[in-house]
Amino acid sequence: MNKYSPTLPPSTLKERHGVYLGSTYINQTQARTFTKFLADDIRQDTISRLSSVRYISFLTDGSNGRSVKEKDLVYIKNLVDNFPEMSFYGFQDVEDASAYVVLDCINTMFIERGNTEWKTNLIGFGADGAAIRNEGILAKLNHAMPWLMGISCVAHRLELAAKVAFRDSYFATKVRVLFTSR
Image (cartoon, rainbow, N blue to C red; front, side, top):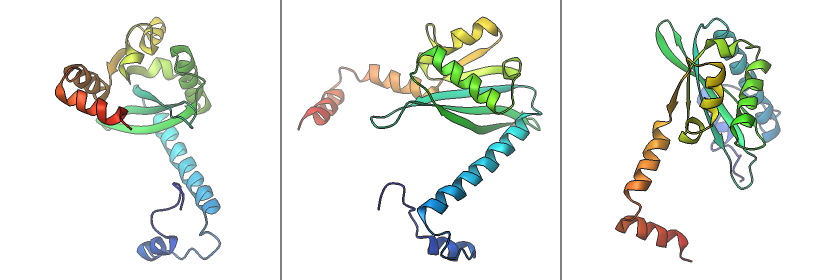
């Protein structure tokens, strides 16, 4: 079983939801195709809902790993009937995590989804501290949109604060030894 295998056998899902799938659709290739169609449907629904929204905020973060190419992830926050709603907007490969490259990625993502006016609707921006500080993404966006408010990610800020607080403590030493010893 690889890491992309389903956790439940398809027959269990069939029984649980009362859907007869037959043997044609019970394989990884068809599961991938089915998932793609679901994702496309959700994406179109999100794009349609956001087309009538007056103001948006977006949150972005990058992800990378040793074997995975750097990706930028975007969520959109807006109001629907005066209640905040958060929607996954998409993710794209980026060459590196520099502000210009990530902004180009975000711009491309909005344009590909038909939202060419996203900069006029944007009122808020959230990201990790690196994107907010110095000459990061917020600084680049503020050149064109001085009204834009940027907010650092609370989880990233908490992680940085904990790192500073425990830097020279007994526990930090123990953790360092644990992770560096063989």
